[in-house]
Length: 73
Image (cartoon, rainbow, N blue to C red; front, side):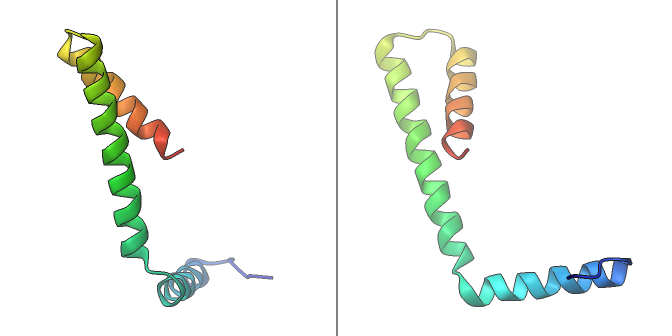
């Protein structure tokens, strides 16, 4: 059981968790892979919208961002 009764114990727990994650995982590599995946999905979405003839740049931008956001959910 973790005692999080004061601010110091919360910060200590956060620091321990950060150190554990950094030792166990390559977080920069995970971030890079996720970023490249989202970028690829958004590029394909934008290309598809241009091929379908969407004229409104604002609508294309909104849809592309929405699809990119949903791709990581």
